[in-house]
Image (tube, rainbow, N blue to C red):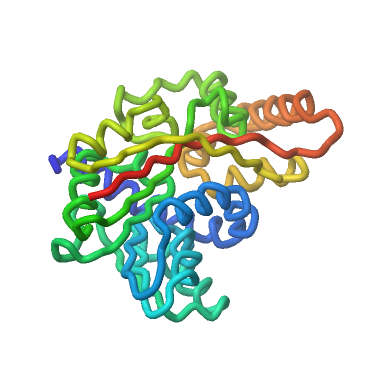
Length: 281
């Protein structure tokens, strides 16, 4: 990676460590929201027996912990940039009595594992943040055994993910923020159909396929939605920290108005959509 990419990586590491407490607080809600994508990753890679599986961008532990429960004599290595997020993953494993996992803080672009180590690789919502996506995919290919399986998920476009745009677009509109440079890490960086597919194919994965999976963020109320998003979403928190009280109040008011308009019955259950990509070495 070049110096700029290394700088982005270090900024991301600091942000995930900083916001790990929020992810711990909201773990039940966020993991329920992300469960359909995790379940499809598990279905795609079909973990079984004594296999060894690498879970990348593990965060608080899923889908790696679910994969570990499917194995009999095998184990899962949970990896993430953030030591603090992996601490939560270890706590979740202990709470659920899952013993066949280990954690390793590392950069996906410099995986500290030998060639041909893993039977399968899972990566739920990591690619859009990787500074060098091609290098990340090549590293995943390198550590997979011949015939190994890989599955990842990335968010579909903003039009299918109101849970992001309700607050994100409101912040951008009010604060007149400059859009990030093309290709910069971000939520919808990988949303184009076939984008990750083409990266997988470029590094040599075979039998590559893509499908859409939908989900619901069952926040229940606008208060829960606002509080959760402003405690776990680093870009939104960073932007709001630069707003004065009047600006922040106006942004919050507009977000609540959008939620009320879209969910007039008060049941805030927000659609989400992701692309699931599969490949084999």
